[in-house]
Structure formats: C-alpha cells, structure tokens
Picture 1 (cartoon, one colour):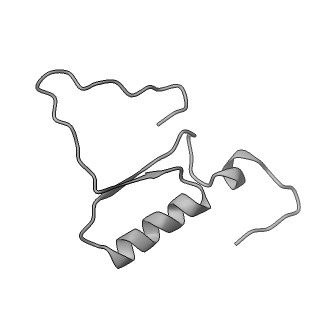
Picture 2 (tube, rainbow, N blue to C red):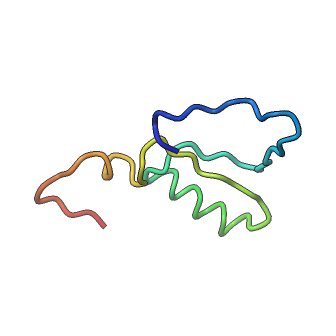
Amino acid sequence: MAGTETLTKPAAGQKTEHFDVLIVGAGISGIGAAYHLQEQCPDKTFVVLEGLDGFGGTWHMHRYPGIRSD
C-alpha cells in the first residue's frame, strides 16, 4: 500500500477479509514478527501493512554509504 492510499468502508456486498494478526510495518521488527508467527503459529493468518513502496523500514528509506548490514 502506498503512503497516499486510504482505507475505505467496503461497498455493500463486497467481501471483507479476516486475519488473526495484523502486523503494521515491514521494517526489521515487522518482518521478524511475520517470520516467527509463521514458524510458531502456522495455523494463524496474518497480513503485513506497509506505508512505503518497499519493505525494510529505515534501511529501505535511507541509504548509509559505506555501512553494511546483514
């Protein structure tokens, strides 16, 4: 989801989706939460919402010349 989009109420007759867990942000913590949730609770459904065009949080938004991260 791009940062300029907004959520609206579904139209009549439109199906809404249900998830057991909502993870807000696809930075290192959100990605880690999704990974561990998938490994430890495979029966739970989840979705990760991100306001940017990509995932990675600070490491996606900013560039740090000369710094490596693994």
